[in-house]
Image (cartoon, rainbow, N blue to C red; front, side, top):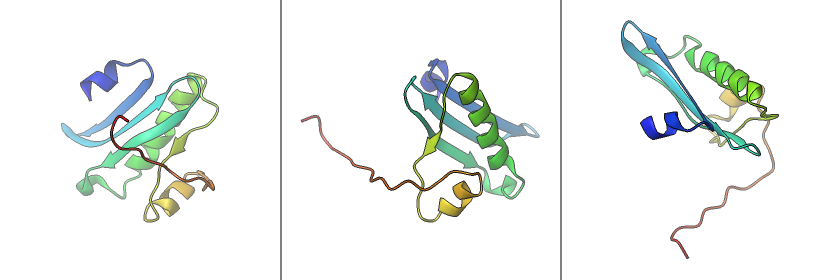
Length: 101
């Protein structure tokens, strides 16, 4: 995370409670695309709106940097969570190429 945190395209926010990391979020904006790559909340701190607060803070920071939209790659299990934060399901497919060829 140190390398990503030093990149000006990266937004990396953490939440600390009682000297423990309670959660973190990492997103990037390259001037054209914005994506949330990671959202994590320690299980003992879940159900306290920490994740929602992190998403809102990251989106605010990304907006200040000029990002008009923010995307996240979600699973079926997490879809309703993201929809509850006003993210919309898009009719796209995520494609993957392995190897350098």
